[in-house]
Length: 80
Image (cartoon, rainbow, N blue to C red; front, side, top):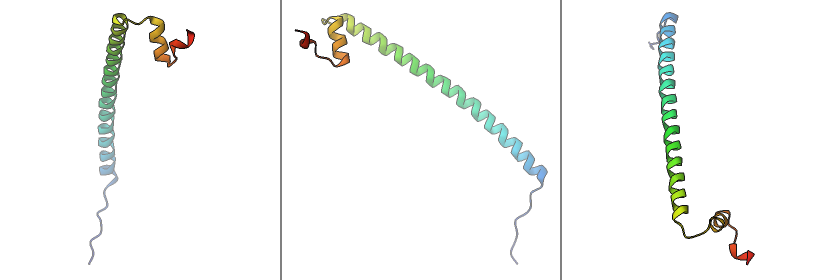
């Protein structure tokens, strides 16, 4: 004789559903916090890169126009 699956009561299933909703809500809160932390780290990295780039431009022996031409990919010697 084959054994059949026991039918779970709707009350038990409702309790499991509520428990799973709670787990999902906590996971969403953790996810949002981690997402904000990542955004803050990316912002900090970008600020540091900007500062590093500005320091390099200031220390450079090249003019602003030469640096901008290089960044834009144009050839400064075309004007000469």
